[in-house]
Length: 156
Image (cartoon, rainbow, N blue to C red; front, side):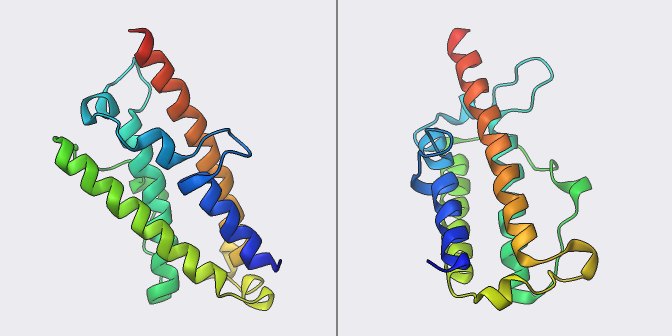
């Protein structure tokens, strides 16, 4: 399996259908979750909704690099989202999250190993491989938070 397919497979695992690393994935944790639970705050922790939007922000930002060859996202804005105030809005967000993830996976699968080792927008960001692997690690980190927050909420 070429490197791009391996990375794409790992992205599918964390977001859509895998259980190998964390025994769960974003889709498993977020589908059928009531928006009020997704928005529930526990002390100073981010809500599940904010964490999910935060990770989608990076997925969409990297996807934009593939589509428009520009990196428009900034870390300082990665937690700035309007509230999700209905189940319909939550479900619409999740649909967009899964769609953007699937489109990103398709772009990655089509890359050659040479493409993966190319500069990601600007030399200071390193290669595509570095950024995709960074997104994976970041995603697992926040997936763990989501799982723990769900457990805390269930105890309330």
